Each structure stands twice: as structure tokens, then as C-alpha cells.
Amino acid sequence: MTQELKDVNRQLDITFWYFNNSLQQLSIAASEDDVSALYRVISNNPDLLECIDQKPFNNTPLHIAAETGRTRFALEIMSLKPSLGRVLNHDGFSPLDLALRNGHRETVRRLVRFAPELIRIQGRERITPLHYAAEVEEIDFLAEFLMKCPASIEDVTLCCETALHIAVKNGKLRAFKVLFGWLKRTNNRREILNWGDEDGNTVLHVAASTNQTEVAKLLVKYVNVNAKNHEGLTALDISNTKPPIQVNARMKKILLRAGASKASRLHQLPTLAEMLGSPEALIEKIFQFNAYLDEGLSGEMRNSMLAAAILIATSAYQSVLSPPGGVHQGDTNTSNQPAVEPGEVVMRATKFYPFLLGNSLAFGASLGIVFLLLPTTGYGVLHISLVLLMLGYIDSALTISPATPTAVCFVFAGFLLFTLIVAVRMVWKLLQRFPSASWETIGSVYFPNRD
Image (cartoon, rainbow, N blue to C red; front, side, top):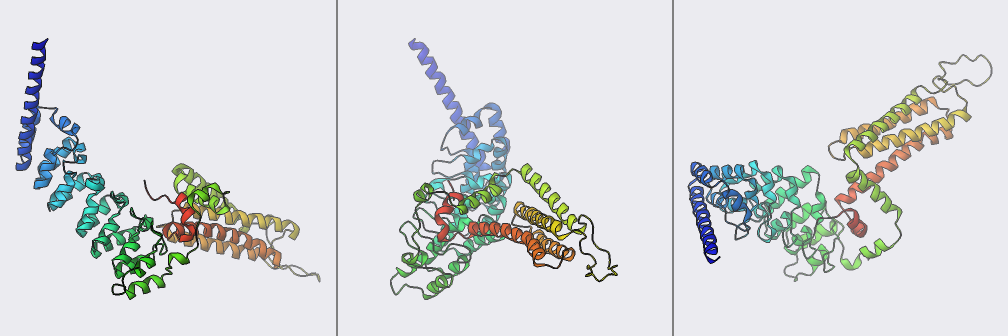
């Protein structure tokens, strides 16, 4: 039994030596950018890369290649074992981190082009390559990372800081402008501007505490200027708490012009627990419906609803152009009875008014549903076209209707319904982009920041 144990230990020692020897050869090949040596080592030990991948916090040959700027070797080993790109070394850095921190720009670009998801690998203190690029103001890489991996803007550090927080805290104005400009131009994820760090400080709080007026001037149009941090302070409170010699009059002016207030002057909102324990308000049901349109509606269902709404709108508009019974073609009246205007409906008013009201409401509702189902960004021309179509319907309906207040009211009933639907949708979108303090509690349910 003792001899068998010795044999097993001996075999393990040989295997361990063989693995370490192969790993050493691979590390040398990585530092020399020798791709041929990579395949020689692998041919002798086919399971080597798999074994390396299984070891946590391992300084792999890919780390060595990335740290020394050996681009060809790094890409070759990434092709063979893509998961190695996610491994952190003993210092908590990924291969992309090392290439970026050591200034190997071509290696960074090639790795990102090969696997954009590497941008979201969270290393030491959950810092990503995007966070580091913001910290050191690598604006070219910032722009490239955002274009290759847009979702990386949502990543936060261990201190719950976004790349925007990091840029402003380090006084990197150019980096902040790149991040802010990307958010503004892509017209999505703007709610990130209102995210707080571990102390509840938004980017505006940070700008106020560091007297960065240019940052504040850009932010106030897009954020909740009265957001409170965990100490219950607004950006204006933070600006006022500075010693008199450090108070920036321009900063206070920017905040006050944007409607900023002291926390003591703001209405006390109910807590989230109080809101959840209270009866559901109508506004919350409207929030739920809009949230369902944004997140819960499948593409197939959206297309089906859109097709049905367009069909109803088309039928309703056609009914106005060709109403039941037709329209008068001209005045052939030779009696003393009042003449009927050409183009006016033949139907009696008592029958026509119910038809007009129902048709107008159907057209307004269907057109409103089309407006709801269209994306809010990139479809501005279509939204304007829907409004113009509604106005065209009003003109057509008034043309065929008797000149009475009742007819006018029934025609505009459809317009009011359309306007109401559009208004609710626009308010929802505005609250998503610029959630004010008054919506803070309810919004926390329907605007979840992040995990």
C-alpha cells in the first residue's frame, strides 16, 4: 500500500513538473510573440490551455502577451481559448486591463475588435477598462469602447461609481464630455446621469462639491437638480456648505437658474415602504402600462397590435371620405327649404352624430396606439406625420358634417383622445429622462437603476 502511494505521488510530481514546464515554455513564447512555439507546446500538452483556464486568479500567457504588447500571440491564444480573456491575474487585472494600463494601444484595439465583451470585465474593485479610460482621460479609447460595447456605460465600480463619476471626480473634463456627448447623441440610458454612488451622490453632486461649473452647466438640463444623496443634501446644499472662500458664485447661479433648491425647502416624499403599502394610484397604473409597452411587449405582439391599429385608422379615415349614404353633390333644391351644402352627408343628423362620434374616437384611439408602439427615438418624422394625419381627419370630418356645435364637439373628441394618449406617453418618457424629486419614490419601482 505504501509503495502504491509512493507511485501515485511520484506520478503527480511528474505531472506537476510537466505542467509547470509547459506553462513556462508558453510564457516565454508569449513574451517573445512566438506563435509557432505556442502550437509546439500545445501539441505536446493538448489540455494545457484548459488547465490554465481552470485556475482562478492566474497570470496566464495571455496576460503576459497583453502586458508586453505581443498582439499576434494574444489574438492567437484568444482564438484558441476565448474564456482566458475573462481571467483575472493575482493583481485583479484582466488581459485587456494590462494592455491598456501599459499603453499597448494596438493590442487594446485588436482585443476589443476580436471580443468587445472584454470591455465589461470587472477587475480589481470592479473597475472596467472603460472606468480606467475615463480616469486617465484616454478619450479615443473611451469613444471606441462605447461604440463597440454600448452597455459598458452601465457598469459601476465597487463604490457604485459610473464612468461619469470617475471622470468628474478626477477632474477629467474631456473624458466627461465624451461620455456625456455619447449619452446625449445616442438618446438612451440618460437615466445613468441620475445614478448615485455609494453615498448617493449623483454626477451633479460631485460637480458641485468640486466646483466644476462647466460640468454642472451641461448636466442641469438632463438631470434631477434636486436629487438628494444619502445625507439628504442636494447639489445646492453641497455648494452652500463650502467655506465662504471656496463658494463658487457661478456654480450657485447655474444651479438656481435650473430650479435647484435646498433640501429643507423640498416636499417630504413618502418612503418606498409607505408607497408600496398604500392603495395603487391611477398614475401608477399608467406607469405600469407604459413600462409594459417598453419592456413587456414582445416584438411579435407589437407588430400585431401595430397592424391592427393601422387597419382601424385606415377604415375610420375611409369612412369619413365615403360616409354611409354618401354626400350631397350639389344644390338641386327648387323649393323654399334651406339648401344643403355640397359635400355634406345625406344621413339625418340623429343617425349621423353617433356614427361621427364613434368613428372619431376609433380614429383617435388607433392613431394614438400607433404613436405608442413606435419607438420614441429616431422616428420623429413619423410622429409628426401622425399629428398631421389627425389634423387632416378633422378637416375632412368637419367638411362632411353639418355646421353645428354638436358635430364640432364629436369631431374633436377623437383629437382629444389622441392628444391624451400622446401626452401620457410623452410625460412617461420625460420622467424617465429627467425624473424630478416629486416622482422619486414611485420612479424607484418603475425606473430600477441597476443590480
